[in-house]
Every structure is written in structure tokens, then in C-alpha cells.
Amino acid sequence: MEKKYNDLIGDILERSGEKDRYQEKWRGKALPKEYLKMDTFQHFQKIAKDAGYLPPWLKLQKEISALIQSCKNADELKKINKKIKEYNKICPLLLQKPTIHNEQLEEAKKIW
Image (cartoon, rainbow, N blue to C red; front, top):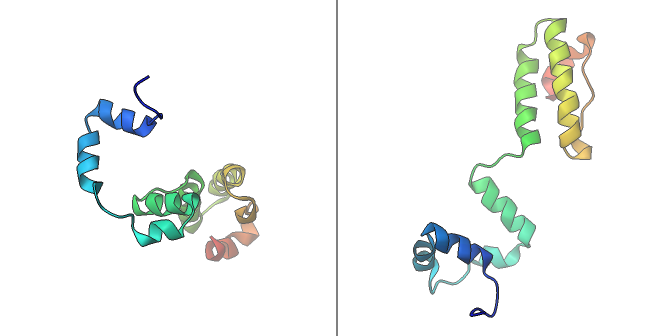
């Protein structure tokens, strides 16, 4: 074994021909101070946010909101409630929302 450690990311970049590009970009540069202040998860969240990543439940939340704003009848409300149930399965527990009834539609438009 030539290497003293496993460099999985380095191996992937090397196989793709991208390793030299990344090494040149960051060679000899100090890590940003903000990188050292955050834990790994916070750092991941910042990178994901900067890259425009949205979790699936957040994408679904935006879709439900748009559907509620344009809802006009009970059939559309059934489809919305089905999506709300799907949303509740994948979102964090504290962000789950109840299904909507006809008489609650105007209130739901404000909440969502």
C-alpha cells in the first residue's frame, strides 16, 4: 500500500481529471475564518444554501402554497390535502400542518 491514508474525495477528483484544478485553486490559502467558527453541519448548510439547494419538503411547501392561493373548488382542495399529507411525512415535526377544510381556505391562504 503506497498511501498511509484513504483519500476518497481526492481519488474521485483524480479519476475525473478535476484534482489539479481544485488543488491549484486552494493551494497555500488559509481556510476562511467563518469556516472555523461553524460545525460541519452548519458549514454544509451554508454551502447548500449558497448553491441554491432546497430540501424536498421545502419545495413541496412552496408548491402547496401556490396551489392554495389559486384554489377555487373542493376537488382542488382534495389534491392539496393529499400533498399536505405527503409534506407532513417528509418535513420536520415542528413544521407539520393540518389538512384544510372549505371553511378554512381563506385562513390557509394567509398561513401558507
